[in-house]
Image 1 (cartoon, helix red, strand yellow):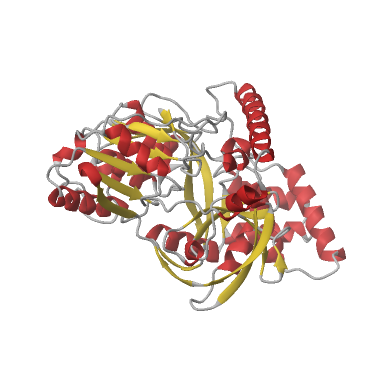
Image 2 (image 1 turned 180 degrees about the vertical axis):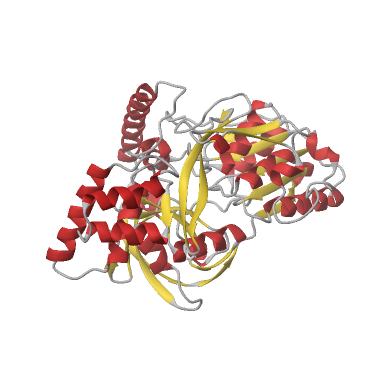
Length: 477
């Protein structure tokens, strides 16, 4: 790869002739698709113009790296080129330990959008919420800044501070938040016994330790309460993670060896079937990390809680448990990220994270862009979730991959119509509120997941107890 970049840099500044370009590039082209020389000449000309005329000098490596990043990022929202720093940070994130603020982010309309503040992190303690837009980092505007640079700016030495300017759509206001960076150690599995012998297990992300940690928690729950009569698997705000982690979580509740998810793409190695067997979910440790899990968890009545921020690996788990009718899905339609990203090392310190396949639930259904629809739609708040109409899902992204199984254009048109109707309903309702009621709404904080104020969780408990459930009134559901 380094030799190819060296050769290409020479081509770009016009130091060798076109015929030499054909010779130098042919060896690389044999490894994959034939490189289009006309388009490469255009890139060469642009490169040369920048080197000659741009207002400030730029290093060749910087230009070429940015060119590669632009090429990859134009594919879809989830493909990206990872330089040395990006690659290191990705490895830290999947291991569950890194230094920073503790938020999962994406880009929206040129600014940074918070997908999920990691529980017990500096960002969560500072009050950041899913859906918040970050417009400034210290004194620097985010608009025009790459997502990679924004991530690097927010990460840093533990104990140092950074001030974020946050715009919260639901409150129509901007405000500063100063956060102290810390070492983030993500505990991806939490659990406790609720009233009436019901277990609550929350999985916040899918990491290397998630499956063995789940096995430990389930064993502890069974020992703590031998009379368990139901379990709630909480995947709300879980943005995904390792595919093997998702397979292992589903396997803990499904019969051995059944299909959990399949993947299909262009490359031969992208066509795979993952079933509920140790070889498919074992990562860093030998043996079966689920071997000691009590058999009761294969049969206990089960609810899975999801929302708009349940994505990717979370959707794999929810989709599999729904297909086998092993669990009832309660909550909101999930994010709709039905694609698989593979990290391909390029050099010793860089890699390509590229979308290589769609994934399919056991019944063969693709949830790309559509998400997993709950069996019982339920709001997060007792009096409804007016902010849901502002949430951006995969289908709302301009460059999202299309779902090949359904008439997506019709779905988008229908979704937009229902969204406008919901906005109108909310505006009419807000118009009738007093100034005091509006101020109260502005200051209302979302309930802590798993707490006594968690309305969606209370409805899951009601369902397992055979009691009525208050369904969502949102037109989007």
